Length: 293
Image (tube, rainbow, N blue to C red; front, side, top):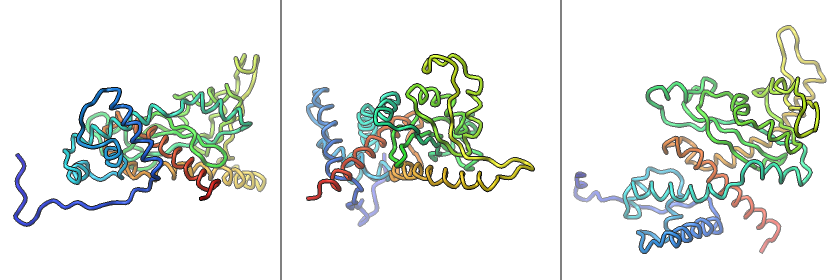
């Protein structure tokens, strides 16, 4: 049983501003409403709009959110898991995304990885989730963006010690890009990815022997510095690839990713739910710019 608060010191609640449009809040509330109707839920503590408002708040402690709405932390957790599952189900699959990019005439796709910080793990998972590159515990996720930096797809999460190129190989991203005639463009962390297809033969997509191109910057080696032309090529390549950082910035605008406190088994579902929300926000912003009131 919890201890009662001292006299004169009751819980306080305050309002916050969400960096969301009303359209996005309405979409999430609509998903919850359909879900409740399908479950034949007769009564809930909050309305669909109220549940959406609670879930979409930036990552305070669950008990803090619940206290402001008269519900427990376990209820808020259940609401969060329900909503992110509904949103993640609307995320486009990789093959559909690549087919759409190929149909609009794109030739290259930007690929990069990032680390989502998590709490320190226990047992064997502690070492597996520690990134020596970032000196932090976390989960690695790969993302694909177009040439303008718009997020197209995010991968399932992998342990933090996984290198970007290893994650790309496990997920077979290069093969899936090649099947749609698209070229991956990565940073120096993907240097050597092209060696995987140096001796490729009898490609099912080309109908014979082929050698797919993987775009990466030049890398200086011992006693072999970069030439002036290679440095200029790297500068041009970096200017093209800087767009991918904008894609990650749009995703990490959600403060829940500052340090993930949910169980890591829900991390992939959460990222895909945030991707759907990011896409909807971008679409709403573009529509407002093209059709001003």
